[in-house]
Image 1 (tube, rainbow, N blue to C red):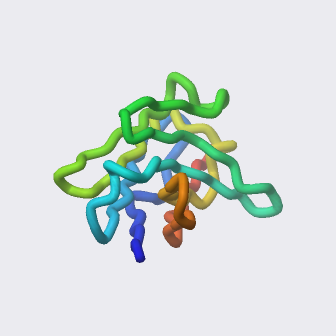
Image 2 (image 1 turned 135 degrees about the vertical axis):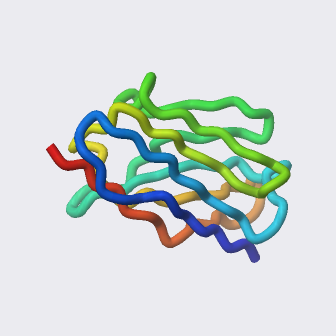
Image 3 (image 1 turned 180 degrees about the vertical axis):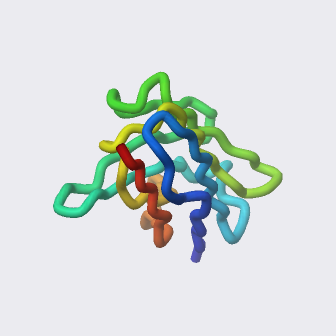
Length: 116
């Protein structure tokens, strides 16, 4: 079993920045692909960014050039640096750990609200 705990959300103005953190309860980064998803009210959950076990990153088009996903294996923590935030980024951001042969894990999420 793995627990994922997100933090770092909050209220920010358009153009502002936030850094989200996701800390895993044990060392999993060598075997799990990690990702950030977001879900806004009335909308489907959306993949925002992910980082593979080989440190390959990918982003959804709407955040390219503004968001950066990274991780610190020594701290079992993944980050999402979000710059130039826009109102459409408002959502609950959830951390995900995915393994090829085992069930996925999601955290409870952290709320990000961008005011216009």
